[in-house]
Image 1 (cartoon, rainbow, N blue to C red):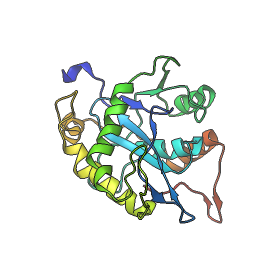
Image 2 (spheres, rainbow, N blue to C red):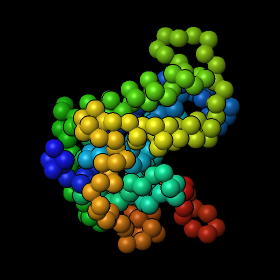
Image 3 (cartoon, one colour):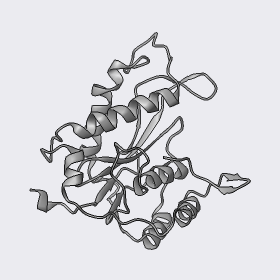
Length: 229
């Protein structure tokens, strides 16, 4: 039943269970074939993916911070309505977001932080289903799809083109499919509640907070910046 869920209670994938090395070869920054990692954050109530990030390296604190920022902030894309500070943030024990760092983020936002037990990852089935959907409904139709043990696969897509196709599929297909667990389309279930998302006091404070957690700063002449949504 819908009442058994807490609206805007997110189920985040902050460890290996939210990071999947996708079975597709892309051209990296150096023009060499490489498989990207996908870090995703999912809303537990609706099943919507509220933030994600691609990287050719195993997820770092900065990668996860960028995905979390995207999840919290209002999106410029009119097809993507999900945003806001979660009431509860579930996280596995990962090296990218240690409990000390996450506790500081949770206290400042604020949000309730729950770490799953190391041997009992919470929400693993939901993560696996989403990643299975990515592979079965998107990747298998793209050039460079490389199943385990396959040979002779060539990389032709670069990250910007792949990211565009991924986002189009996510917002126009995946969010409009009936979810296996909720029996609702994620987009419709998110919008049905009619609630007002909690937002940070300012984007500048949010950026500084997440940068502090990530321990990485990208400084430009006009200050510290995150990549735009």
